Length: 138
Image (cartoon, rainbow, N blue to C red; front, side, top):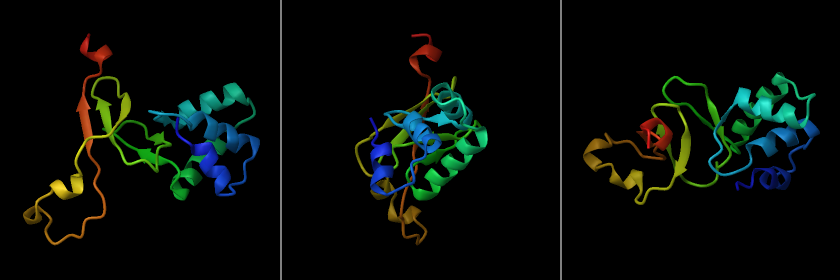
């Protein structure tokens, strides 16, 4: 489980019923929902949550650094609450499912000096791709 709701409370984020339900929908491990999926799950819990509120709340959570916006292969943006736990993503090339993965080694140190072109590296995003068991027919 991610600790998104607890992190937001700790920041003193104004927790209206609508914001709380959006945060609760996003809370968990391997959560990578689209804005429409967040809206559907939020309205199932609190019917009066508007699409605009969901979009605005997601934008604010991204701006706060509490949620990561994940975009893969031209698909809809997804929202990842595990913003404070270093990880990479494993994406199914078939259905687009996304899982958090924690590879060993540091991608920043694996880039040779000759390939850095004088850049002072501050981060790396690695996306692993493949077929999930359902798409692979396993």
